[in-house]
Image (tube, rainbow, N blue to C red; front, side, top):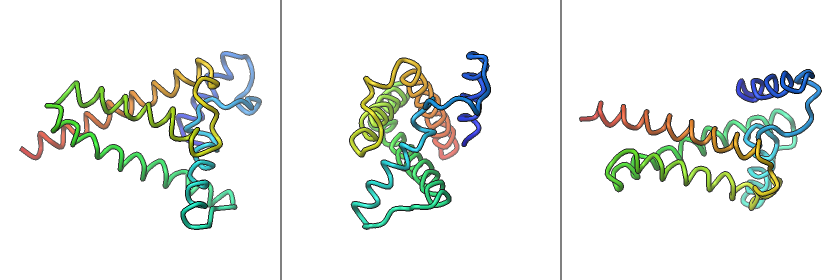
Length: 148
């Protein structure tokens, strides 16, 4: 589990007066097996193979997050160019990321549709993707300044 995943569990447990180990509900779909289920579904359809071991699923989780995040992050530069800079590029990038998060994994399988997530999960998703979009926009802006 990632640092943010552990932090979510600790905060949630503290608010409930319990321990993180006792929490069985999903606090964030990005830090759950749903990412692996969706990625494994696609991998199985494309290649006929999907990981079965815990280590293989963990590797797939990180490959999907870093690979997908990097590929999607590269789109921001094009948005910045086409939309004339910030804040338009960052807002459109965030909306695209959140739309993919709410639609892609339910379509691929294993994740419920967003209207069944509940307010806490929706808030976590929006907050995480807002932070991601802001970090990508800041990194892109720094690289653009450096390249001048």
